[in-house]
Length: 81
Image (cartoon, rainbow, N blue to C red; front, side):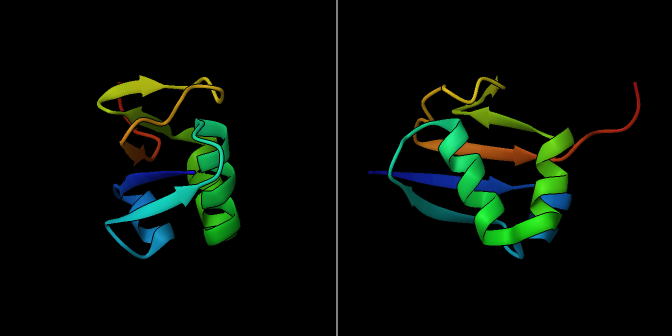
């Protein structure tokens, strides 16, 4: 079991209805955290996660088998170039 500080930004914050929270997940991987976020916040969060990204302890992460670390930032898709 791992306790992870999850911080939400922009559309991710809207989907979660909060800026941050501590989530306990049984498997300390990005995939397990992603599944937990979708289970908690449904389609709005799933939409954010489909095009967004994660920062795990400040580093961009896409591999769902990656350990989550102590802090994960959930970022929505960004426009522009």
